[in-house]
Image (cartoon, rainbow, N blue to C red):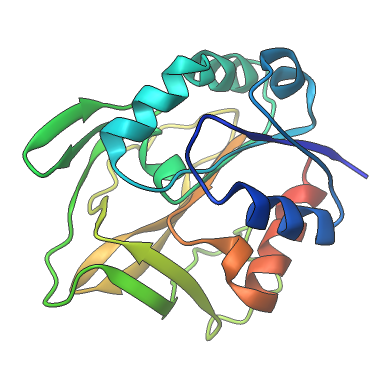
Length: 209
């Protein structure tokens, strides 16, 4: 049973993520303790709300350093929703620009869509060879709640010896729905709220720990 820490920095659906990961087969702890977060087999970075507030909360518990140290040692990290967004260079919301952790290049911006937020179930387009989506029917839907996203992927180099695998979705325009890049993975949707498909994705992530 792999050990997983859900980083508690004041943002995110901590309990629903905890329950989903436990059902998927993990020994889960919700904590802001840096040592526990560094030593766990896997680290989950959740996030709900505004980009700038989430980044501030993450840095308040040294979460940016924890993520950096884990990735330097090839230790798996999974970002969820805004927890994915803050892994990019910067976010622009309501005219406010904030720096992210910079693990990936890119800007989180407001989607160009007639209806926002993008809330509800949507399909995704996973690339060939994806581990996160292994065994998941392409017709399956995942649960999204967001108005902002990364609309362009620019990183082509490798991290941890593997080429980035980028999954896309569409709401008004294409946007990045998930990324697998070495030890660092992330989803814009909420796997913990995505029924059987989300549960399979979490099991796939745990299997690789």
